[in-house]
Amino acid sequence: MISKREATLNYLILGVFAIIALFPLLGVLTSALTDPSESSASLTFPTSPHFENFLTAWNEGHFGTYMRSSVLVTVSVVVISSLLAVLAGYAFATMRFRGQSVLFYILLLGLMVPSEALIIPLYYDLRGVGLTDTYWALIFPQVAQSLAFCTFWMRSFFRGIPTSLIEAAKLDGATRWSVLWRILAPISRPALLTMAMLVFMWTWNEFLMPLVMITSENLRTAPLGLAFFQGQHTSQFSLLAAGATIVAAPVVIVYLFLQRHFIAGMLAGAVK
Amino acid sequence: MTTTTAVGARNDAPTAKKKKSRDRSERAAYLYLIPAYVVFGFFLLYPLLHGVWISLYDWDGLTPATWVGIGNYTDALSDPMLRKAFTHSAVLIVFYAVIPILLALLLTGVMTHATKLKRLSFFRVVIFLPQVVASVVVATTWTAIYAPDGVLNKALSLVGLEAVTRPWLGDFAWALPAVGLIGTWVEIGLCLVLFLAGVSQIEPELYEAARLDGAGAVREFFAVTLPGLRPQIAVAMTLTVVAGLKSFDLIFVATRGGPGTSTTVPGFEVYHRAFDLNQVGSACAVGILLTVVILIVTTLIQRIDPGERA
Image: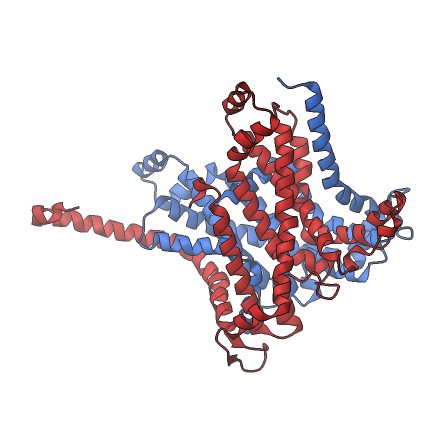
């Protein structure tokens, strides 16, 4: 059986690692609340909370604009990726067709290719058709890079559904299309949620794509905006910290509410 | 499948009908796939192939390109700058992958010895948190910690190690390990959470059997825990090694490859060559080389776990 001392030791070890993980993030949060005149490039603790830093950072740093861009791009990517992946995953899971394995392996490639290898040709291709410095240049490449994972994800989920369920529906005269939307889509809601969360996180946190594709200030996404803001506000760390908090908050909040889905999804998704 | 010739004409009609319905079902499958493959083709496959094509040219992005064949690759492989970038990646892999995995394994070993922990979820949530924070935010945070008047230096002076303090990210010798430690901080939670999940899937009987055999904590770890975690170790290695090889965001925001070229990595070289030096062909070659390295490394890692073949 487990001794009390051993359990205490275990919690102690976990506690130390929890503190190591939390300390830098809490440092940013406390610095964001410090009086701007007292703040330095180090993490500081506020004598009294200065919530107005968030407002100052929001206005001075144009985070309102950046957050709007990020929301627009992220929502589009999540919706389009999910939709296309549901359709493709359905075909891979329930239908037989020529070239199935070849198409599958091509998709597998998408799981391996780093965006660093795609970004330069993508930039020249999209510039050639006048799409650089538009939201499209952020949305479609991101959808393409999410599709491999999302299609695998939906395929394996649909495969796990008993075929008898689908056959019963077909006997009742349901078409393929209505089987997908009336039967499979409703029961795949948890899987869809996990997938959407992961795509949301990847898209929201993406930095290289907006860095290369976007030149207009009003199209910058939140992480890109933060990088520029950092260049200008190294001396006023409380404002920079407030900006960093604003950029990180949406994903962290969603994570804290749905952490069970998040961790399970990342671990399961990684196994593929 | 061989019966058609023997049965002859009588079976023709149903076969044709069957074939027709198969054609129709195939066509339906393609209709479901087309939207995804159109986007995938235009925005991933085509750029990838185009990247390979550009990498065979000497091109500045503006004036006409000249064909150099594999010239960019041979140049890249003999370029000390690029070798340096890949060497830095190797160092980063130690910090991103080796240290987190070893530490997480050690912790898992300590924690699983005869123990079922309750209320793990709080720790799980907190320790995993660095994984979900945008890397720009992570880089900004750690830049502050490493700053000349940052927390690290303050803590060092506080314990009388004034002599050790330095601007960590501006120091030629220390910038790379300093960036690497940020990677350790990010990846350790992933590894620990992955391994703890793996341990919970190991049959409790195996632990009981080990204990009946009189195995101590160390023997138990090597006989039961470590073999049982093989799939999770393979996954952790794949994710962390790839993260270490890429690591563009962190480098770009924290050091921009500096000071000098002491923290440049292949991903940063791609950007730097294309947009600072106007060597677009060479930049694409570096991107393709990085992809090849990632493919080789992930394939090798998959071999650790015999159960993980696709």
